Image 1 (cartoon, rainbow, N blue to C red):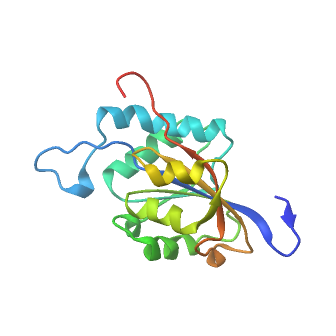
Image 2: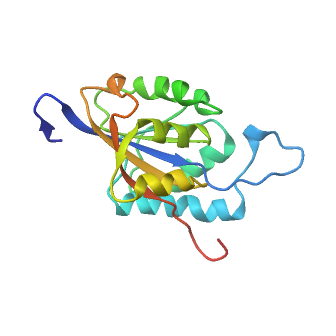
Length: 181
């Protein structure tokens, strides 16, 4: 990875909100499965990341069933998925908690994927994005729906230095898969 003088390598934080979930009666929130639309959209998110050459070096995924299944379906679209760590702190996390988890990322990781939940993920992206390319920031502020993917880029010496306003929102998509979505 090319470095700019004194600023460190380009790092990317890829944020994926879990795909659409079902709400079966009697099932606790952490155990909710994906809905049929989610089963179609999660692979579409994986394909979109592969096509945009935004595959991570490491994935951190919430332990909730809908997030884990989103990760499984999205990463199945890649030749060789990266290592994944299932992180209970990502479930219901707010911005400070999410930043704590991100800042623990090993320095060798240049592209990190978070798979989790709203409102925390949306709030994190908005907190970190000092600016956005084109209309990405405006579109994200309007809505960060299920299966949405946001990519933040920044130059830094390590993940502990990531701070609010320090990143550029470079990519925002809401991949959808198949008919009936």
